[in-house]
Image (cartoon, rainbow, N blue to C red; front, side, top):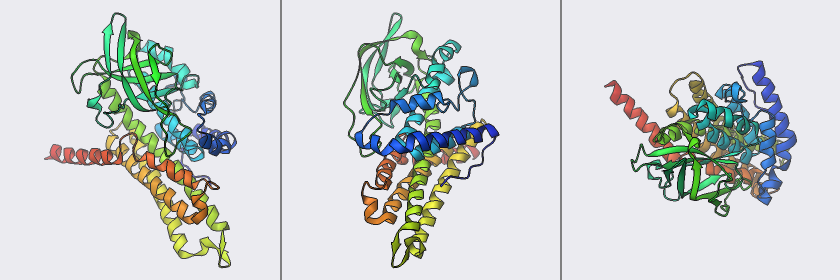
Length: 386
């Protein structure tokens, strides 16, 4: 069922209508087949870019939609509800484009952003490594200045769009300082020495390629450094706050999709001479699922509105990511329960939704990390007020 949305402008409602049309006509009909075949849908990202849906939160002068983040996230939720791999992919691409938008020079923004936002250049975010996930200070990939370039060596892990992206937003160490030694680079995919591991065999999001990205004496032109040397930690952490909101919106879209299937099934499935939705036990289950989805939506919208107002939103982003992804895991699991044996088969999409929900509790910082972020912010505020 269509979610009733409150949007800030008529333009936003037009974008909602466009998004829903594309989701219904071009995404949802092929999602199951592409997921089963583990087929990366590069053409879909081109379509979204040409339709203006990859550029929503970026500045208009570079081809962006100049939309508030709350509008972008609600469009992202719609996309994820139709096809989760695409929703996550759009979020990853936005995360990968963020550094150029906020830390690039005027010339870098002019040269790079139009193709990135128009869909002809798909991005990947290269932060994690085999031994460095949530601990960004543990990154070992090195970038050493060599004339008019940086010589990069190292291995990145768990990279969405690996092997399919046109550029990689790379975080590499330019000094040994644990917190001030990281720098950020925009790396074209066609540079010599750049290679990829085999795609990971994942529980879900199987149409989204996830690989290692391997740098062996890759010469990255010095003009692809974003910001100054040593700015990488700040760039990464600020981008992740926004990225967590993207994952929260995707998780809500997935939960809404599972709820919709469960409600339709409960209204149609007959047992003991009546629809199973007439039984109070099942009604309570559906009510709890709806409450979880709508509560999660409210948390990410609150954080997005703080961001749009220029206010601190890091803790709110962590809360949104935590609440929305835990809700997605619960709601998709309950949807399987509503459908019973059919829910456990691939005849219905809820088993796929449940598999896809799990990773939302892991990437963009595990939910245990989110709890640490939230608690530390609370305690820091108490200390500051003392």
